[in-house]
Length: 267
Length: 261
Image 1 (tube, rainbow over the protein chains, first blue to last red):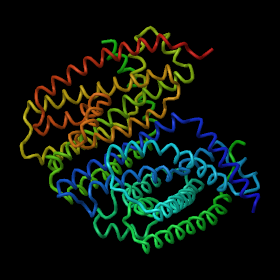
Image 2 (spheres, chains in turn orange, yellow):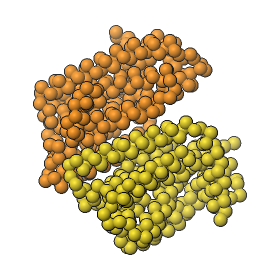
Image 3 (cartoon, rainbow over the protein chains, first blue to last red):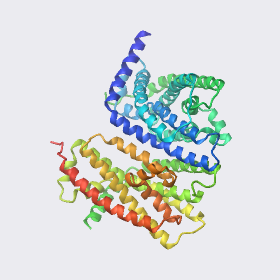
Image 4 (cartoon, rainbow over the protein chains, first blue to last red):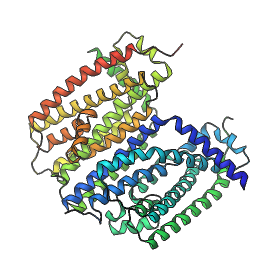
């Protein structure tokens, strides 16, 4: 057990050191990413103002809070893309990974978790600027901040395992692009990334309830901006645990089956 | 004239190359349709709540979206591939091979690559525009149509200049791939008329990253919002930008030392 912890810490440290070297590149990436929520924010603020100061239960200040916290959640959301498997298999990188004594999922998890530490640090200045420009209504209590932190990492785990499992489809077919695009579009619409789900029609919200997307996106955001009561937060954390469990389960089963189909290319 | 001949020759070769990979057409088509669906859902959500976004009616915003998709297709087909190749060449030092050719270097680096499958987006944008135009109450006169085409061409030229200036930065700072991410992020802002953005953002989107000229202005011409003043400003700004781009390209070349053997 302690060996495993040391392994994780080592990989995470490596990733932190690596990412710290690419500060400028990381910043370009982050600024490009900030454009997206800012656009949504401006559009919906315009709508809210035209509607007399509220849309879908959100005031302009709350919308600002939603989309600013969005930027942090989105950063936490970046995990191993399923497209990476194509490269791994084609270049034969997987062959050497398979020779290691531990499951390759551990290294990926530790690597991205370490990167998140850098992402959170680099996000802080962006958050300050956005707060200064868009004046969000945000008064979290100490408990909410604490729960937000838990939900943030919970969301990371939900999305990490979902996409890791999805990536394994690459072992079965090489025409994966269409499938992934479809997945990401569904995620965009049903996670609260495009708009808070309360702005969606009721039937869309009911569909979203059966899917993991919102627990990795909207739920952490709403924990911090004070849209949820204690019961809802506990329920949300439970859903995160449930979907992480489902992800781990699928990953475990699918990994063993995928490997049987794997024939090494290169070495 | 040489410019057109060179561009045409490269276009033919590029098209022949891409035509070998026909499946890519279907992938592109699928992506375009998915992006279109997402865009339409976005519009639908907004107009579920209100019937007028900062003075723009649904059909008018559909026209903005059409121009946005169309211009995006032009960028993906002609501009971005060339700039990507240029960055790569500077990175690897292979730009030397292009610079030693007798033709004008700026022309060469601007017409070398073409991704014809992205023309699907040009077509998608044109169809969306057509649908939007049919719903516009005011109708479109001949003057509007001419102004639209002119604004579109000016916009494309401005985006090209903007890209080339950024890419010339690759001579100084080699790692610029993330600029691509940055641009596609900012370009998304053009999906909505720039008038809805706060003043400082409007300034950025007009003169720093000319998304306003590339998308909003052409859309304004179709929805009878365009003033002659704006069009004249676009002409003047484009001319100035072309000259500045040329100067910066020359300056960049001078500091390029080559990295190959």
